[in-house]
Image (cartoon, rainbow over all chains, first blue to last red; front, side):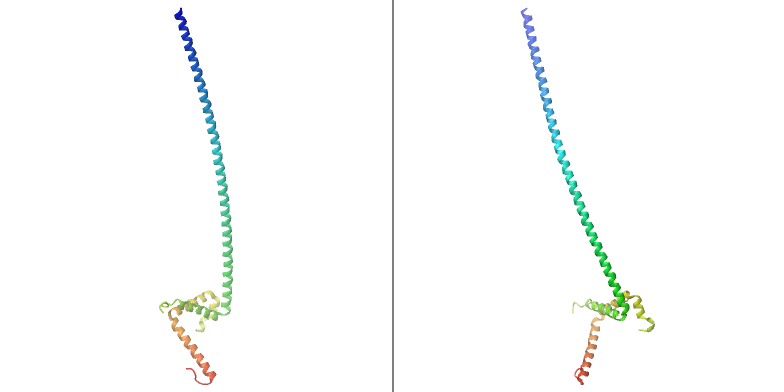
Amino acid sequence: MAEASVKDQAGAAVAAVAEEAKKGAAKTVDVARERLQQVAEQVGERYQKVSGDVRRGAEKAQQELRRGAEAAREKYDEAAQRMRKGYNRAREQAKSMTEELTDYVQENPGKALIAAAAVGFLIGLLFRPGRNRE
Amino acid sequence: MPESVEWERLVRTYPIPALLLAAVGGFVLGRSRGTAVLEALSAFAGRKVARSVNELLGEEVLD
């Protein structure tokens, strides 16, 4: 009789310990789950922040690139326009000079030929061989 | 220059090539015979000046 009572008491104690262990394990699992959830939320927030920073940086870089490209294009357009104007002006001047020269030669053919020959003669005199040795 | 060449008409018809040709001719002459041409020109000018001076003074001062 007493032996049966002891057995029952031991069984009850074991059951109580098992119950406590089960509760403890469940609590540990809950705590771990909660921690994991917190870590996941933190990682998510960090990711959001970093991706936002990266996106803002990329947008800024894109704006800077676009601004630089526009400035370069404006400079190129200005330079091209300036060169075109200079070329046209030089062409007009050359055309005008050629016309004046042609008119002068047609009015004074002898003088023009003598002047051209004299200029050529002087240049030839400057570039004659052995001039540097004299 | 022979009259049949009509160089004036040629120069008026082709003014720029004519000028270039004259300049090239002058260049070649100056490069090859420049010194001789200069000496001849200066001798000619010297004789002219001497003759003018002699005429002006009425006697042979310069040769």
